[in-house]
Length: 261
Image (cartoon, rainbow, N blue to C red):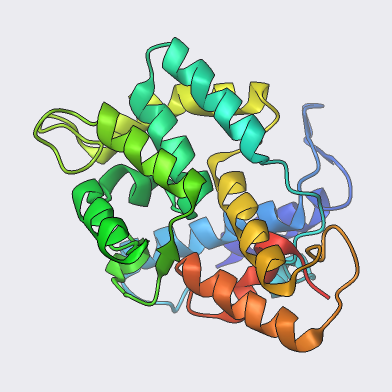
């Protein structure tokens, strides 16, 4: 316990200034969220080895500050930039990676969801009802029809493109010889580099762009990242909708995508 407590003190020091080792080497400062993630990793490893939580380091106590999940920076995931990135991926021979990018931005899917989604089922639902549910590859295996999204022109184009580039005989973007990990390393690793060159920081940023679209459509105005909040009732409804369509159970999670009060 002394060792992990000392590790907590070390991380707390790095929140404010670089840490200097006796040999003169320096470890640069870190963000609060990264410090929490590092301590969470330590606790996870300890639990995996011990199968109990008797040795546990509370991150908030160790760092002296809570992690803020409220987004404060502008979202960098315009649809035009997403399409440009997808075009570059196609030009480099990475069609399935482009499909993941488009599905993430158009439907708010996580990368795993975009990779494993049953595209045939989605197209059948869109043809029948004009909307489709996100069911496969969901976090924690959570399958819920409440996460049903209307298919506009952009959503339909993204779905059609994914179907056109999927491996022959597959319902999703994986082939029979693929697995998710190898697909991530081979395809999505290159995608991330192209995304950054097009001004999009990450695949998660695409979900933020989707969330902002949903929010602004409901409130008929700017998201909290673009302007002041107007109608509080519409704001609450929009946050609940954003959280649900992104696959989260708590409306408060919406703040990490579209900003808070």
